[in-house]
Image (tube, rainbow, N blue to C red; front, side):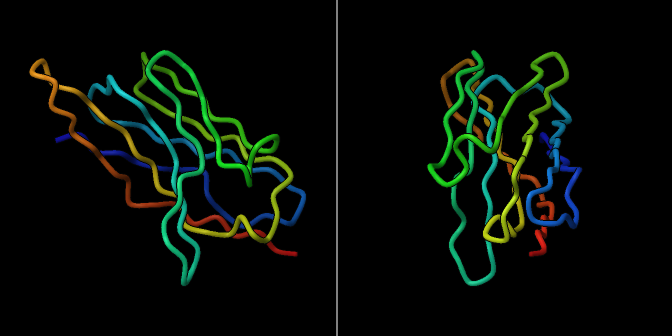
Length: 118
């Protein structure tokens, strides 16, 4: 069983930056990404990066956030710049591993709180 451990959350003023990290305890060979869930709202995709390094972003964070991964370290990062109060949420790491038979196993981290004060 692979475990994902997030780090780097915290409190920041509007306009500031934070960098989230998510380290997997085992091998990840499929996409890795970040989701977030604000109070009273559904969990939403923030950014995802394929094993080959292709990244996609939610419209709300394009131009402000950057996702990257280090396959050798089984780690994914989310650099968040120009943070706004609307970015306040619990951020969850997500990663997938595909078996030889093609079965995809999805893993989730426990979440990291990001709070942006205005």
